[in-house]
Length: 294
Image (cartoon, rainbow, N blue to C red):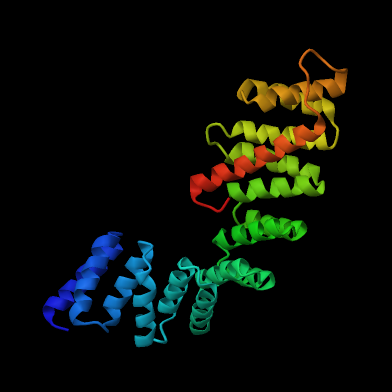
């Protein structure tokens, strides 16, 4: 490669490092005109195309692994490019090749776990995400994914185990705290669920989220029919939340304690449905805020 092309390749790499992906892609393609098999240019072109969501990422990364078949990172990136193209089988093959070359790379294992889950291989997904979590005890991401996957599968106790480990590693993890409180509520671990919502009062300080948290606390007390405590929480909710659900909860709980009042209360089945929707909304808010899966 002549000096001009070396400079062009360096510019493409610098642009990629600066997250100027369109410019990086343009420069890499310019270099590939005269050097179509250069691994460095293929890598930049493929990875920039991947960041830009372009189908061409598969082409350049496919050519790259032919030039550098022992490059675990290249195989991983090809796997992600194939995944973006909805080629689950191709993504799995590339990610497995990457893991064979670099078994200790947790990100690749987590990606393979997600691909396996999408393909319905739930045990394999669980195994890969668990191994990724073991490899990076300082990173909550694999355990967060593992918890959510198990929750969606209906493996509630296994999800609780993963969420508890997540919070041992990252006690202030909001997503994990939300999920664990809800899971404990689901299985009747009411003391644990209430403790979880109290922790959320400390760690989830986003404006408007206090109403979601106190509604969770009210639901705990409704579930175990502790109407006086539910009333205390409902009265507190009226001071911080103007949601219609707050008014209906106050009327419902008051009715359980003192009989029907002036404000007609919805039936328990409706209350339960609306509280479930409120919990789902809370999870979704944090998914949108931090870019997590809802």
